[in-house]
Every structure is written in C-alpha cells, then in structure tokens.
Image (cartoon, rainbow, N blue to C red):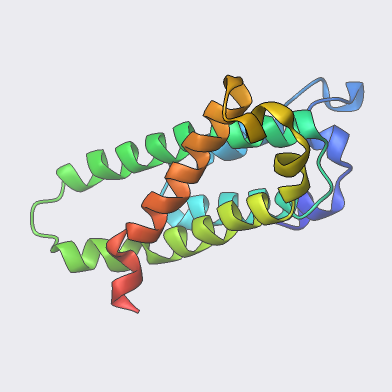
Length: 155
C-alpha cells in the first residue's frame, strides 16, 4: 500500500526504463484473484492509492476498461475456490468476502469521482457513442452490480 502511494506514477505504470518496463497495475489486477492472506484486499488498497493520484486520461481509461474484467476474474476465482468446499454456508461466504467487496466498492467509486472531469469533457462519452463510452458503461454497470451485491446486508 505504501509502495503505491510513494513510488512515482510513471514507474508504477511501466513508463520508466528504471523498472524494466514492468506494469505493476496488471500485477495488482491479477492479485485481486488471490484470496489467501487477504492478498486481494491489499491489492485493492494499492489500486485505491493509485486512483487517488492525478491520472491522465489515457491511464484513467485503461483503469476503467480493465476493472470490469479483473473483478469478473476475481469473482470466478472465488467461485472456483468455494466449489471445493462443501460445508460452507452462504452467509459465511459473504462474511469472508466483505473486506474485499467493501474495499473494492470504495476504490471503484473513488476512481470515478476523482476523475469525473474526464467524463464531462469527452465528446464521445457525452454523445453516448464510441469505445470510451462502451468502456465507461461497462464500468458503471459494474458499480451498479456492486451496489446490488448482498455483502452489504451482513453489516
């Protein structure tokens, strides 16, 4: 978490030759699938630290485009892990997922609210057409699905 808040943004995003061109955001998106030792919760916190920073439009759109797929893959991985356990109740599963879903919801909302000016200044998004609009629509659909998720009911 401190790594994501302290390191230069271009270094984390792979724009620096100092890190060998490595893209740490892709690694964090992949780590959202791993539920052992709260790795996915820490990955979401790191992504939240990145979302609070001033991202340019291209990087922000990459986040918006990649997030629905990454969350879907994380949910698929969690479903496969649950399939191996037969005696776990649905309420126990929701309790296990609560820290991840709470952090994920906060990070997704922050990524949108911190960069809302990009939405209001993009002509294609305002017209409701083009690939940027489609990516944003998928992202907003993900936010709506997160609001409907039953994990909030156990609080």
